[in-house]
Image (cartoon, rainbow, N blue to C red; front, side):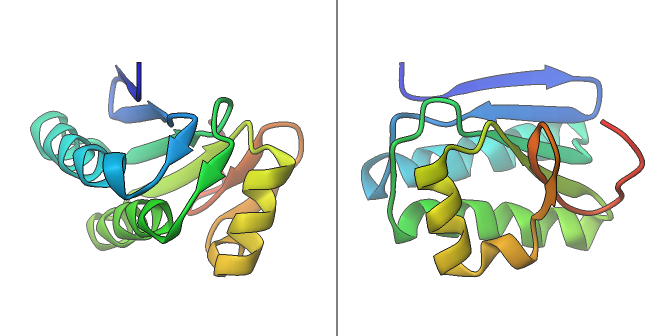
Length: 114
């Protein structure tokens, strides 16, 4: 299983694969965009619980969904961020658009609850 998608109301959770690289990034991008449009999603949650590696393609997936959600008034969050994933988010500058939230990882946008 590479990636898992869960929809709960207007929220889409994406459990990212062990390796988020160019081999899987385009598929995640396409599936996420389709689900966001089809189900009127207003929050995308990236779950890093399995992720051990992420390259620039993975960063692009997150950045693209951030832009999409920002444009539509939605928000993104990242949860279960491992120390390795956290380093990548910091080095890429994504940490500045995905604020830290104690206990759950990272979140961005409206901080009014989960």
